[in-house]
Image 1 (cartoon, rainbow, N blue to C red):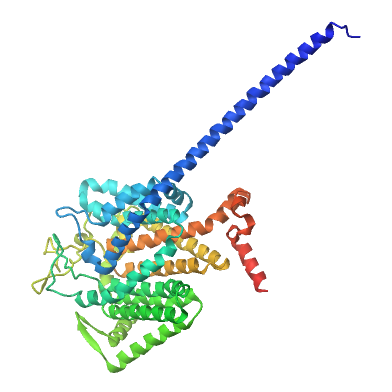
Image 2: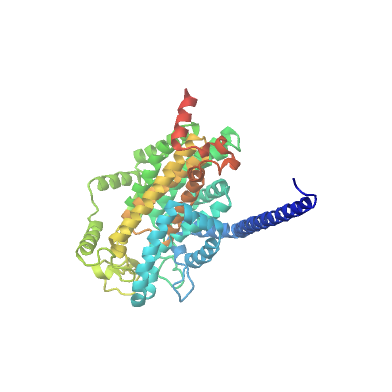
Length: 538
């Protein structure tokens, strides 16, 4: 039996123990709360930092879009003449300072880091550019500024990261792009005829501090842009107008613009076989992407066939340079391609391949800075002076030298070796795979506009890569900037489309529940989407 005096003592001991235990729990709880608060603050700080970077990009989005559209529009309308504008006395052209400024802005943004971390095509492109940078470091001290200029083959790829980062900030950029590019194409459909008619004008003035005439414009680039613009109008502008205008008005506007671009493509294709072939690939690919034929498509096809038939029957032709502008010239171009009448390029390519295969640097290539025209005896670009062509032999030094081989893909092999070629193939394999996968998902979830955009991007890029086989186009900004911007647009849209499935695989589906969970069809895998599509058809 407990004594009366022991009870208060026991209560005191228990109370003291309880107080001690409570203090211990309080300390542990306090540490837990402090840690949670610290983590929350860190998360909030990171979120706020990302928000600030996104807001910074948002603030700069307007002027950036204006600068980039001006750059792309200048290359579209003025080609080589615009590309050769530079600070007098320096090798600094328009694209380089614009690229440097936008790269700094994009790298410091959360969207730029997100693109690099999660976009496989972008990471593959970074690997290719890193290899180019390593080779540049080895040769820049020997060749100086020439090595930097030759590195445009890879550093223009930074435009893809810049464009992709800004697309991540403004998710409606694709919708905004449709009317802007449509208006630009309407101007090009008219102004392109002026540039085509004057591209061989000998009496035109020269761009300051260069030997390039203001009228200099490659017909192959006109043909390419006209064909790609035709595809854009049919695939994207047409449904965009149909949502906003009366049916008859939309069909008429689409048909007029599409036929004008198609006829411009045919006219420019008579002057350049490479441009004709690449444009034909785009025109033929449009029905495969669209998969449906409305009245606008039928009207466009009928009008184009009627115009070409009329010109062929009347044998209408316009003398222009070395080739007439006529339908019969198109037939001659097709026949010459079929018979393989292009031995000139083969004579240029063969010694390059033999040299790279036999020398000790077949893995790393020749690097950047060496003049490949001098190494292999290529002729210089012809430049007319007072009606006489000069600069067609190696003796005419200082006259616009042809520094690279007449093939961008072969130039990768010559300057970056088989390591560069392997990375080059990986870049395009990753890009096409992810875009094709994203387009398939968008078609299954009934998002036709973005699916059509990815289809157009793949068509345009295929034509660009084919055109780079006929000519060294990816070394110059007038084509390279367009190519890498399309690359970045496609990679950003594909990343946005495939991201939800990637999150579902990483988190088991719980992390994306707050964004809609299984109610959002983009959360599903391609296998689930195909099964759901089959069930809906049943």
